[in-house]
Image (cartoon, rainbow, N blue to C red; front, side, top):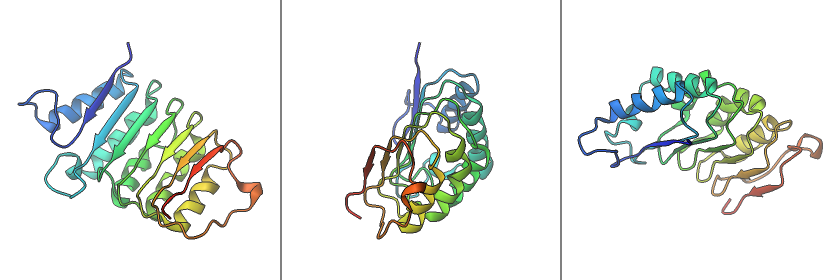
Length: 187
């Protein structure tokens, strides 16, 4: 049976469920290879929501659990769940994946610093077909770093709408080989 778990602002599976308990439940299920999708959403405004206030250690633990999981196909961390600082801790331990096909990190306020944190993961994620970085401020530097990191990956679709990209500086030989669709509107 395929299972998915979500932890979003203003949303829990029961009214009295503690967000910390819900997060630990998600982490346990990731470690036990029981999930095919996780979605963690912040509030986008930095208030007291649990995801917005996770510790650096918790981001490392989540990254390690995902890295060791062999069933997880979709990871969605959006709407302020991450920032450049959290990305460094999350991707410090998430350095590989043999199952993630889609990663969505939209509306997190990420810059080129956040993209650089992802590079080891992007270079070793053997099944990653799609990345959504829409509405982050990665700009040209982050976008060019992203393309270089994805050069030998199986990536097919890249979403970078509204990312402040002014120029693309990559030579055709270093373009991701399997990239068939790239979305660059509103740049």
